[in-house]
Image 1 (tube, rainbow, N blue to C red):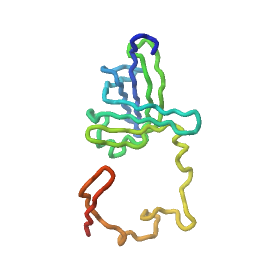
Image 2 (image 1 turned 90 degrees about the vertical axis):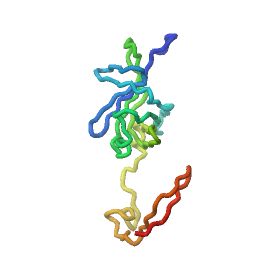
Image 3 (image 1 turned 135 degrees about the horizontal axis):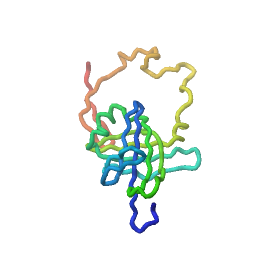
Image 4 (image 1 turned 30 degrees about the vertical axis):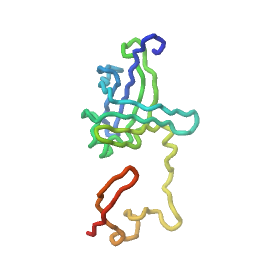
Length: 178
């Protein structure tokens, strides 16, 4: 696929949400039919370098894109509908002469939106090994402060504030009493 003087390579993504919704995208300038699935042209989607390991270190990659289509909306990203979605990234020869090269597979992790763009972290399968196997506990309590299992009344310990300014590294709050 990459041996010709002029390459005809396109990157493709297939993203499957946990609720079954699946979208397929490509960075090519036209839609591509691959394995019976239409991969919609999404030139604004760009992957970062793919970091792969041969040990137990988690494979990671970031994907950036524009929030210009109904396929991936800011509302869905912020609502967590894409959290944990399975992503398959591969390269194809868009002329259809050759097969595909698998580049990576993983789950969507942290997502950040900024204006009309988003960045999503893709975590490889070995990232699942980084999660705790059992609940973290202490000798005194298994609950988190303020959750349903916690016996600490949070009503008198809460303070409400209004956000009045945002800087690169700081938030300025104005305390508001209820």
